[in-house]
Length: 263
Image (cartoon, rainbow, N blue to C red; front, side, top):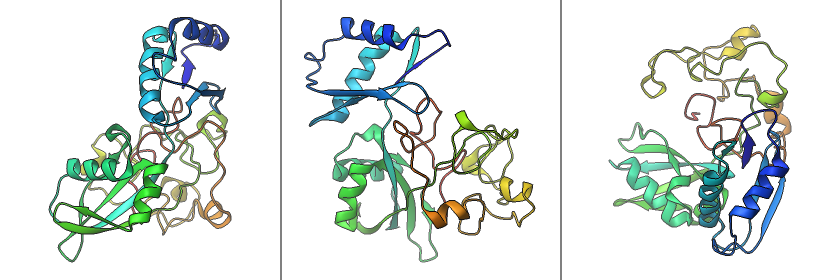
């Protein structure tokens, strides 16, 4: 995806410069599809076999040509899974297995913290490309280390604003005054690492709207996104993919503005 660094950026001029400087034949790219993304940028989709690797190569070339004028990213539509019943293993081992069985790039897989279960085994949240989620879903169980683990595909998360944390819209169309983008998603505080947060869960939205807030925003105890969940996820605008690093590339990261998805 190409997103201009300033208001005067010309996408037409940028594409012209890219076409003159980059040979798709050399990158073995036969066909591309170009369209406007929801955030105003230009989304270039690489079609055909091996698209992930070729898109990565094209991103690197575009960065060489346009780095002073635009932000170049590679959005990937992703889904989420939970692996249940792991033994003592590492996130790297989980990452390698998911990438291998899912047929995706290792860099497109994100593994959360491995958390203990009451039975002495472990569970972990994983985010990976939708194609990989489909392949893993067909397997039902995945062998990691010496243990056969259960794979659960998680439901799609509703569209969420990373400024006000409410559901159903993006930051670019947010009309709320609150800006929680610098806070941690689980506790609603700042100034510490999200991975080692020991503050009790606190839902900012339920607190503001006068409801019980002793839970994590979007959890099963939360009613902030109840309407969205009851009617189904809000369709994502064209060019918006699932993940949340910035709104230049929605999203390639954590499931929630500042933390890992939890029940």
